[in-house]
Amino acid sequence: MRMLLHVCCGPCACFPVKRLRELGHELVGYFYNPNIHPYKEFARRLDTAREFAGKTGLDLVVDPEYNLEDYLARSLAAGGDRCRACYGLRLRRAARYAAGHGFDCFTTTLLVSPYQKHETIREVAGEIAAAEGVPFCYIDFRPGWPEGVQLSKDLELYRQPYCGCIFSERDRYYKPRKEDGRPCQQVSTPSAKP
Image (cartoon, rainbow, N blue to C red; front, side):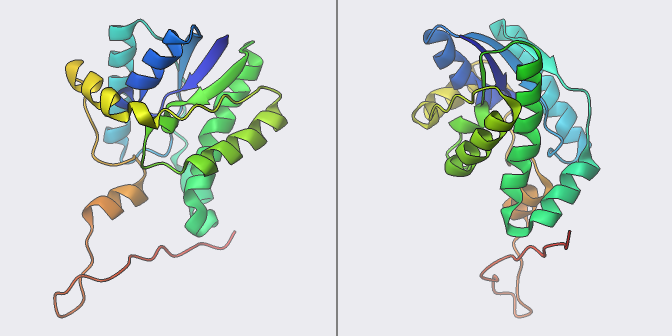
């Protein structure tokens, strides 16, 4: 099967590419990730995706647009459901590319991460697949997560410490404290009205 693989980053691509090739699929990678912030991090992850592609012989299509404003507007409007908006933005672009270039289906390296919302990805991608007329191939790559981490280390790829969006970067590093110095229980994200 000729499959378009949305690539969120080089390290996350390691296991899915290996597994999909073992299954006999003809793969082309597709990099579109305007959620990655700041731009220097975006550029570093794009360089790493290209490095991974070069080291593994993966054809990689790079969508050159960095639509940060569109991503932020959608994410803020979605409030607590910002991951759904982010998945939708990126996977719709991948599905349109797949449909327009004769691919049999599309999938995403997001499915390797134990930190991503798999049911949300599956649901959003299914809706997009129906709308765009190209099937979504759901494969739970999470059992290969440890192997993918090791493969990325063996390839000496840059491994990022957060998913990419400004919100996950905040959640990773910002630990709010009360006036008395004790940690707060929860960080709330204000939602913007559409």
